[in-house]
Amino acid sequence: MPTYLQRFDATPEAQRWPLVRGWIFNEPLPFFAELRQDRPILPMPEVTLAARFDDCTEILARYDLFSVALYKPKQGSYWMAQDDTAVHWREKSIMRAILDFEEVPAIRTWVGNKTAALLGAANGSIDAVQGLARAVPIALTQEWFGYAHGDPAAMGQWSYWNQMDAFWNQPFDSIAWPDPAAIVHRRELVSVEMAAYLLALVGTREAEAKLGIHGHDSVSRLVALSQTKAVDFDLGRIVQNVGGLLIGAVETTSHCVVNALDWLMQHPDILARARAAALGDDPTAVDGYVTEALRFKPPFPYFFRMCEQDTVLGRGESYQAPIAKGTTVLAVTHSAMFDPLALSNPDDFDPTRGPGNQFLLGYGLHECLGRAIASVMIPEMVRQSLRVTGLTAGPVDYKGGPVPEAWQWTWK
Image (cartoon, rainbow, N blue to C red):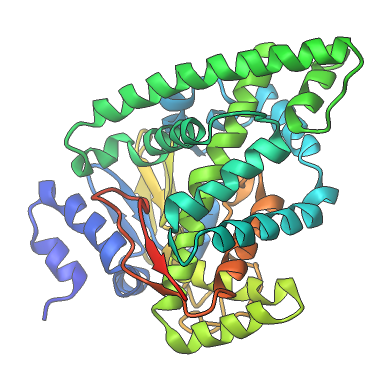
């Protein structure tokens, strides 16, 4: 049988990226192993892939060479669509400060209680995507981030369409969608709805602050900071950044929870060990199982960047390759997390491996803002799910798209 690269070379140039994209999502690990061994840099007209750990690290660390310019049409002036700018550093610092690290243990307890309550009220049957994997982070956004009285269904749509457009509707994704412009339109519509809600919410918090009422949620903290005039952070910046909290929290969390549980359920021996850990007294005992499951099945197989000046990848290696300015580069981090030059025995499932040399929460300048919260919320949701007795699950339903849309669970 021909190898992946033999089939790639025999395919007309215009059809190569659709072929490769299918392998990335449907046959990733054997395809990546061949790439790392024989062609670590794979150029195509639409994108150039980098499959080894060192090259992925360089792409994500060297923001001067590989920028997030592709985010700008989707996210405008938001700091995530910028690299080394004053807005980026100031606003990311502010947002990290108001997401207090000290609250992480309390957040884990809250997430555990909320997940258990949803499962307990489900009476033995639930759509694990809508009723759990999305519902818990939406509730967290209401409770901790300050989306008081927000409509959960609307909040889910705000997060969903912004994520779909920003991360799954890039120019190189056009082969996957019959109408990419329709996704842009949906994102624009829900963003107007979200902005209207947030403007009203922030206005209410401002009025409360003037009356001496000071909340502890993220919105209240940002309003209090803005009113000091100590930093350049006005009403518009508050709205944009609070919107980013929701967009970043819901869909990515859902995807991670579903992927981790789905992978574990497809490996019964490992699932049995993970369940034993979940049933123990130490809530963190399951964390390594979740991290490893997501290494095998991450929500994002790559991060995309735009090359800002002519450069090379694989510098000094036999496969060194030029990268021209304007090239869309995919740091294929799913492959990098199986690079034997970066991880010992990468093909083994090892729940004691730890978080080193992994990309599950990003890397470099654009590492996940909510890293600390995600690191407890995702495994705690998985832990509570594993504690359900007699749980059976059908296949995850993606409904033709890139993210889980429905997943039916039943139990005694």
